Image 1 (cartoon, helix red, strand yellow):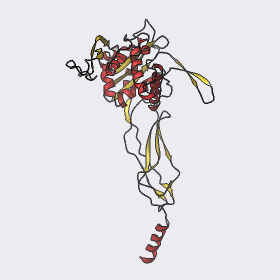
Image 2: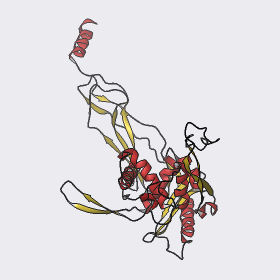
Image 3: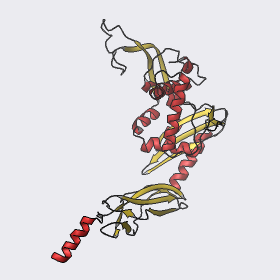
Image 4: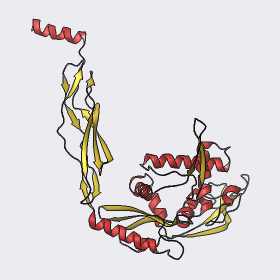
Length: 350
């Protein structure tokens, strides 16, 4: 633990500089209790994997934030910029290639937070671990200290913690309690994360699953001190609206595809084939779905079966939802001198 992490404001785990913890334990501290110091310890540890072991605390945290921003963009967030790993307000000065400096704030939107939650519970390769942590009601752990030197026998069980035989449980114990009361308020409540800052007020991001329907929601500025329970009422309203008004539908459409011209080919055109798949999506009566073919003007021989010739784009309410490849259905050879000789031979000698 660095002095920088230990100096984070409340709410905090209460760590001291020099202490050692398991990453797994700090994830529970972060997700169940929103501990600011735990968030920074995690960010420093992961950030140094990319920034280098010599990076100081703030450099490592900024590197971690850069990775957070890259991931947010990858999953479709368009209005999110992370600076801090714990959600505390911050401003970062950025200078462009022309020497112009702009001030960027740590910021996001309800839509992007709901998108992040959706990724966490449906698409992330770590979704089961995420659900395990965020659904745990109580969790206890300790810090760790070095065990006996290698020339002396290590205490029995020192390696059972996952820290290796060089470490053993220390003398400081910690307990965490899950503050997501909504887990017990509605059938199908899957996960969630509470939050609060003086500017953002009480916030909540959650997910609910009933049958084939999974919803993610985000509530920002949902009351200030004195109205802490408003978010539970609003969360229920949003989930009930979703359950009553949205149905799962497969929006995949079979298209009549044209043949695409082939230049310098043994055939003038090539038939096309669209990828057959399912595109399940929760839709309400007002949602509009349309498709658009985006094809190359032509393909240059030789053409191989399966070669990408374009895309079938799916739009939901005029926003791009998915793109499926359109491919050449068969091979088309190239019109070469040898090919011409072979054809002439067939005409005159067969």
